[in-house]
Structure formats: structure tokens, C-alpha cells
Image 1 (cartoon, rainbow, N blue to C red):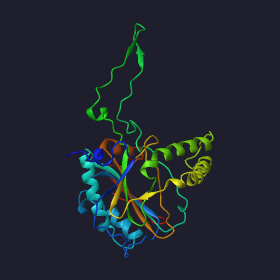
Image 2 (cartoon, one colour):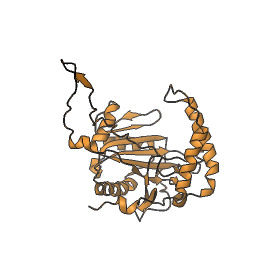
Image 3 (spheres, rainbow, N blue to C red):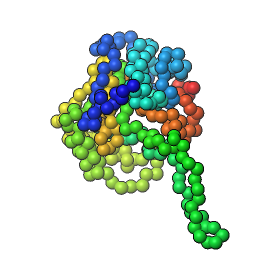
Image 4 (cartoon, rainbow, N blue to C red):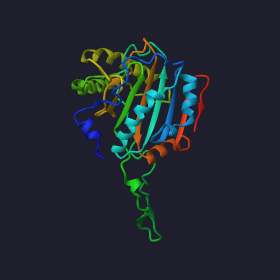
Length: 296
């Protein structure tokens, strides 16, 4: 199958909007709303049919949403599966995030997404072992086992997909201004960052810097415009600081939102990642305030 990425996301572009459901309604379905902020995640092989869906998704839906999400989700998954298979990929990290109406994003949070997997981060590449002295005092290099094909693969993908099933779509800086937006973002982070030791995952200094960068970029990038995917469209975009698409959550003061994020990968890197977190593979889980629980 011919690669869709090269055709649909040329090297000169940081993002593109692709239509996956031409019949998608322009208005949000009136029978679907968000009862509480929550997310559901799945890491494993492509979910190719309704029978493949983990039972935890139904549990999450009942706890978080007012109605079934499947009529909106299944057409999206069918498109994503075909797209990834064309790229030689058959696994992904899929996250569905439900958010109630909030003023939290009235000010844009312009950013690029980091590369999700570090190079070799799944622990597949064997390190070169140090030299060891022989009885004669000479140094000899310890032999390592030949690397398997899986170990030799570059397991990093530098793009991802996302779509909004309910509510407003993600904001993107228009393509002609993406390079300027990235340079402005990087310069602002450099100017406002202060070297400091981080002693916690919730570092107060990092949070303060992030707030300052957000406030500055909301002003400096305001004249560049913005674009959003239409109903029934998916955004395919690059990640990483060098070529990643500058984007932001949309304002959500007017209503609820259900957003789907897809990080493509190969089995080895995804399985290695969840193993680092002490989880089995494949895996699904969900968290909601007061009712969080794990799934398959």
C-alpha cells in the first residue's frame, strides 16, 4: 500500500487537515455531552472493529459521557487504521480526553509537541560494554550479541494525528507562518527560562516559566491568524521543536469537548514504554475524578 504520509504531509508542511467522514454534522450532536473531565487511554494493536474495543471504554463512557461515542469514534478509527497501515505501522497510543466547558483556554497555549519516544527509549538497543583487562594486562573488548532486526530499527515517529469528536477543534497557526511561529516560540522560551534544579515533577519554577511563555506568545503570535479542522477532519502534524506544528487547545467557554489523540508506533517501543511504568501490554485504562479505575 502506498504511503499516505508523503502524499498528504509533504516535507514543506508541518500539518494538514484530512477528511475522514464527509457526512459528519457541522453542529455538535445534541444528545452528547461531558459529565466530568476525564480521559481514556489504550496502548496496543490497531482496534480494527467494534469487537476489538476494550470493555473499559464502555465503562469510561458510562461514567463520563451522556451517550455513546461510537457513532463518532468508529469512522475516525477506520481512517486512522488505514492511514497507519499504509505507513507500515500496526500499533498506537490512543487517548480520548473529555473536557467540560471551561475558561482555562481562553488564552491560547501555543506550543509544539515533544517527540513522544526518545531514540532508543524502549531499551532495545544494547549498549557497548566496556573493555576488560586480560590476564596479560591487555585490554580486550567484550563481545556483544548481534543485534536483532528489531534492535536495529529506528523506532521513532515524528508525527501524530488528532481529531475533535465534540466541540471546537485544535487551533493551528496557518502554514505560511509556522516557521516564524516556531522561531518566536523558541526565542521566547530561551529569553524567559531561568536555569534551576528541578526537584519535583510539578516544579513551581517550570510552571511559572510556562505561564510567562504562554502569556508572551498569546500576544506575539496573535497577528499570525489561526485555522481549525472542520467536522469530520483529522489533523496530521509533525512533532518536535525543529519542525513541529505550533498549535493550541481552543477556547472552551462555550461548551464541552471530546478530543482524540493518536501517537503511532511499533509494538516494541510501545510495549517497552508501558513496561517502564509497570504495566502489561496491550493495556487500556481510564481516570475520572472520584471514579478512576484501570481496565484491560
